Amino acid sequence: MRSFASDNYSGVHPEIMQAIMEANENHMSSYGADPVSAEAVKLFKNIFGEQAKIFFLTTGTATNTLILRHLCKSWNSVICSHDAHINVDECGSPESMGIKLMPAETENGKISVESIKPLIPSEPDVHRAQPAVISITQNTELGTLYSISEIKSICDFAHSKGLYVHMDGARIANAAAALGVSFKEMTVDCGVDVLSFGGTKNGCMCAEAAVFINPEAGENFEYLRKQNMQLISKMRYVGAQFKALLTDELWKRNAGHSNAMASRLAEKAGAIEGVKITRPVEANGVFAIIPEHAVEKLQERFPFYIWDEQTGEVRWMTSWSTTDEDIDNFCTALNELI
Image (cartoon, rainbow, N blue to C red; front, side, top):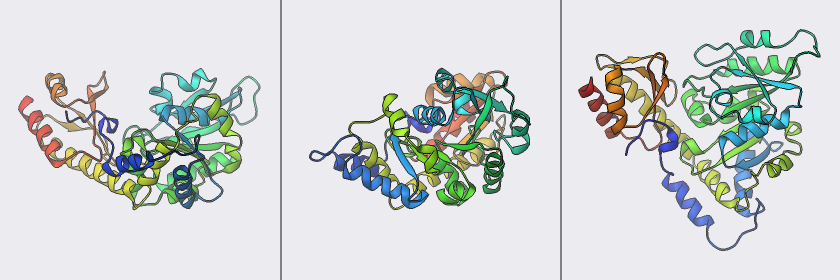
């Protein structure tokens, strides 16, 4: 099966699988006290600074939710986009931990200072939840990118109001590769306080990290991670994945290929009569509207998601393992069905 449903459908990159196998040799200390995890943490600190606090977890939902839980008191809220993964696709996980989400108006999946302002009271109001965090997704759930200046603008505004900035970076590698910038330029230099760093969608098996660039924000997070069942006993297997991903720019090779495949897919599918590409293709996601009669039959051969049931908009995702042949076969089938 070749899928365009999600980059989660792809397998583990061979270099990462090799790193896991190498970490499997002999016995090692548990709960992150192993040399493999220590090397991975060092690589993260080389990027985000020696002051950064790094915590490995296994899922993006746990990473996002626990970060926000850590930053919020019971009377706080988190400002995010309507399309944010934390708002739409995490089964109420933030709310289940008492985190009130306040969606802001978006444009192409992005929030802005102007759309955030109405959600922040001009004076403290005991009757209202008090915003504590602004959460942005890079790249967004609609496959679009925040520019460096947009991120910095949001961070500057947030800090002027005493708020933290959280970046959901499930696909941060795709964003960095697309913008041609480093992780540091897109986070540390802009003022991001904490990052959910995703590895799973970029060739890892199950590897996510909470990166507290602002170390004060991460104080005592290790206890919350343990309390919520995300302290991994055999941490070396997660550490090994990140060690491989962050060595020799494997992250960039994987993400760059994924992005290039999405551009090719959009160009080739968009040339088919009856296909409308609906959104800017800036990373590894393609959004389109195709004739309704073709959707189900095409899904039988190449799984993908219907993004909007009302409009019929669909989403096609590419990954590190997507090939030119995959795209050619998909577009041939699409054209035949139309």
